Length: 233
Image (cartoon, rainbow, N blue to C red; front, side, top):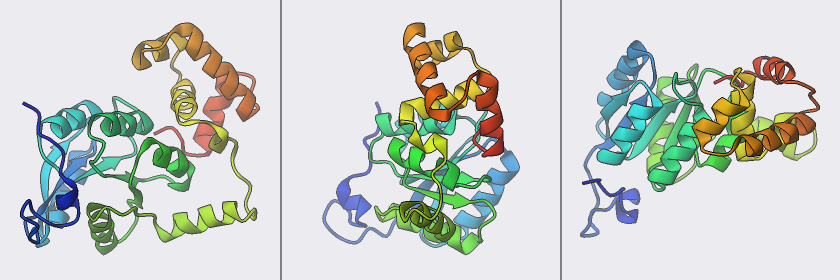
């Protein structure tokens, strides 16, 4: 039997009787490096209000645990061995729509931000950030709000004001961006079609549209662009 997601009352810090909920908030830490997960566990478990309730090294394991256990936040590494981060966020959001997701990234998070927000991520945190700021980010998301780092907020504000050019990949829809990353990673149209459960013809149409929007002529151009902009996660 699958557990239901946390209720709105719990998101507001209340239990079923409307009384303040003082239990520790459970975090699912998803990262393919065991040492990184251990570091996050040590940091989080040392707090009075947060606890690591589960660990996963793959997207598949994260999805399984999210569907069978009760968590308040998923801390999701931007690079996993078995699925792209956009695909993982999309699947988590589809299966547990009320479960907040904090992306933890080694890359310049503004490169992924818009597409991941579209997919349903609740916030972004750079691995180079301060430990206390990470805890603040988790608490912000637990409370039902979005978390965006100051550097990301500044970058997005510059783009919105017209003082910074919008990179071509920002023109892609969420599905187009997902397929773009897979093409850039060297996957064939047939492989992508099998993974996302669409026809080869549909993926080919997406590929043509992506190449046009990105002003590229072949998959190798997409790979070069993705490498340049740290989009291979």
